[in-house]
Length: 340
Ligand code: PLP
Ligand code: COI
Image (cartoon, rainbow, N blue to C red; front, side):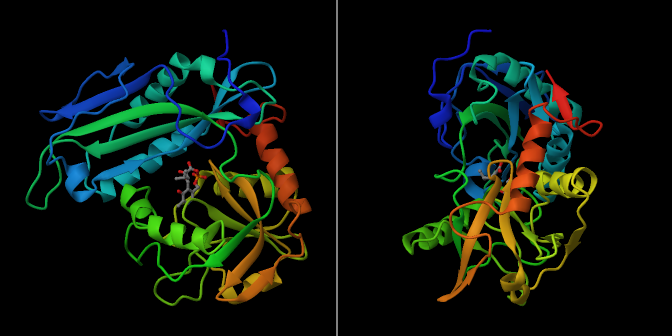
């Protein structure tokens, strides 16, 4: 397979049109067979549920070129399940989970020339989305839906790659208790844009959101979960009903325990404890593990002992082990890698 002629090692996290995308429509009470198309445009009724009432959810996962030159996808079954959970919470017609995985495999195959080569540091980001395409005007769920999968080759989510990030504690809330924080609804990201731009204008890379009810517990950032390392090398991650259950974070907990022999804790994390951790990282499909060097709480600064110039040693081990599994360098737990 001839690869595209791209500067793989210098890709940012941007949209780039690739050859084919998958589209299926739910009309008259059933999903059609779905097709691969070159058409990047979606034509919608002006009153479509997605446009009027933000009835939309999405997923994010990656395809990798492994050490032996195959293409692998990481845990797509968990994205299929999470998209079903998102669809149900938004009262949308779920796309069948087995077809979700088939659609991803087909789309990646059709864009194989865009899967970055092994060792380039880049990956093919896969973006499935599901949205209400039929007209609504009273507040109600759409009767028609579209499911799409497109791909785009990407480099690091944060500019500067492994350089530690600076966060600020946000004055805004990301998610309400019993709200939609635990699903991947487009609306969660729409309402985070102003908070993100505000943080960036103040010189920060991202926000740390605290729990909306008490503002005492760590939640997550706009696009990633937190992991912390204690001074005695325990891996701690916040437990909350209003954060997105990150597949990367769930995988890292297994990696920490089973591959690195570290103790792991998923529990409520008080903001008050954060100053005592040795390392802090953001984890997600896009972020992988991005180290955090400093958190600003309204002028009060917390510096992690891992410093502002490189990733802490435990975060680095976790990152190397996870990417080793994804790239086929290390053996993967049963069912984690789908070769295509
Ligand atoms: N939290 C939020 C709000 C996200 O958007 C993402 C990205 O998907 C994550 C966490 C990380 O989740 P995952 O590891 O499944 O990509
Ligand atoms: C991901 O990690 O896949 C995300 O969705 C984060 C962000 C790009 C929305």
